[in-house]
Figure 1 (tube, one colour):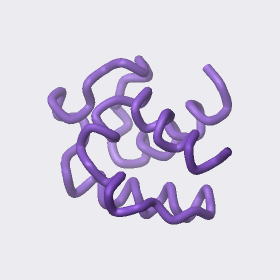
Figure 2 (cartoon, one colour; figure 1 turned 90 degrees about the horizontal axis):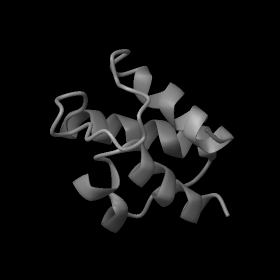
Figure 3 (cartoon, one colour; figure 1 turned 60 degrees about the vertical axis):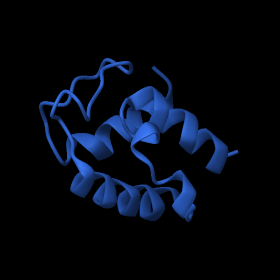
Length: 78
């Protein structure tokens, strides 16, 4: 697990400490996060990484797994 994955896991566990650390686990369909959590996760990502996430990236597909969140954030943190 790399530093970005660890930081993302820490951020999303603040919303639900039962979120699995399996980067491929479907968090939305598994009931671990919902659309309201995504709004808060985006705000935390923007604050912690000092970035602005584009509205077109705020879609469920980018937040359904930790792996997808990492892939999205890699584009912003290059």
